[in-house]
Length: 109
Image (cartoon, rainbow, N blue to C red):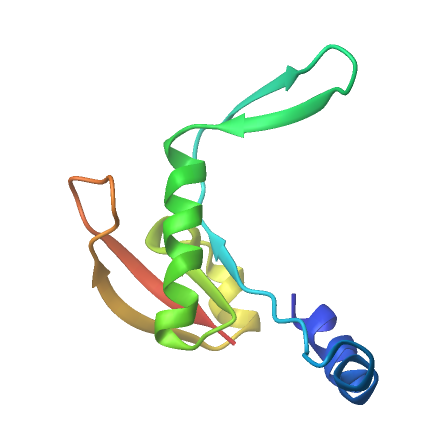
């Protein structure tokens, strides 16, 4: 994500002149069990389902609210390599739609 955003920043003028806007990408990262299934007869796709995907989506939705590019859950933040290689800022406990319990969310820069 960081490399992608750097490349987009370098081409900011081109995007602005050609499309009138600049693409913005955000990511919500969580870990857990995911069900992957292949769907379709003529046009096959792989679809991912489960609570983990829902939490990722809800965390990604918080990116815009907190004006951050990457947010991670507490489960992901337990990986010590993340804090060794990136600046991690706690954003507190967040109540996510469709969940009974709140999730600790962290920004990664």
